[in-house]
Picture 1 (cartoon, rainbow, N blue to C red):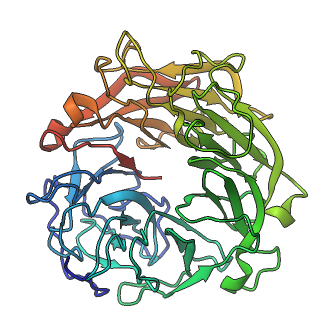
Picture 2 (cartoon, helix red, strand yellow):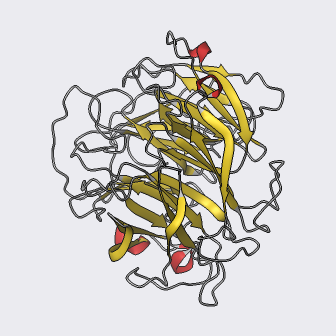
Length: 478
């Protein structure tokens, strides 16, 4: 495969880009970490890492659909490694779009998109992986550059996941990249001519193996700096800096180890000014985190609260609350392989200052159809997520477009974000198996009582001009 370069590309053709407002950004950083065109509305990046590009199976693609006063729209940018200005070339099993994250890396007022290609082979290195930054702007994602990879070995999977946050406490966005053996920190100070070189993060604990780690960012201490939760099936390692950080990357290190899983999300579920952490283990039969499975192999979610006095250990209490379909007040029943917790997202849907927790149950069987999937939403409260007034949504819910079908995997990926700028987070849900593996994305409006099926939308692969079998929504902006 062609060796990818670390040079800034000059231009990028955005196939399928509809007319977008030409806005002028100020010198201030972007207000939203996912507003790629700077119009004040949050956008949604949707990955198709299994998509065939130019005859290359599994080369991968990314589609960004733009927010508006009415929420998500069909206005979009479609990007592959064959797009003009994107480093690299679309090749078999690159998996471009396997993981997505965002932030205004260069401080120009527009969010930038990080796209991983965990299967990328470079020269003679098989499955080395890669991470591409696509720059935001008035007409976004028209140029990009690769993050440097100092590791470079076979099956490195550089870019298994990425995260953006102010980790070292210098008021600029940093980037963390996970690979097969651990973590790399790219300290802030990016511009389009210079992408910083990484520092390896070496955990101190003998059992703190964070290779192939899933990443979640939150201010768990409430101190104004971001912490990083790195989740693998056996453990969740929390990284952070001390209260008196000098901005030295060496101060960003592991602070605590908690029970692990395979999905995670962070947000302030109790409204106390400290983010909390949700960790999901949707397949307990396959992965062992050292705990007794309360779900009978259906999957479960653990919530660790940000707690005053726990700053030295990353801000999270070691006490956890566990939720599954056998928990009182949670609708549904524990059935093996339901994949409860297949995806997680946290944001304030109701506008009351406390975030809600959305849980994907992607293999739930409904109406006699196997693996059709649904989504559970738990309200935030002063004590964290409450099962009172829990809501569940699927394609069988009145008002939700579509019909439950075999292998839809509704709930495979979730994103809570305020796409219409009304102060309440909306719920985006993907079903990559919909329409014979073509995929689809739904939006449910946020209201004072939680997500509403009334007025919900669905965007199918064909609505975006995508070919059948694209697996739209296999990944989603974290």
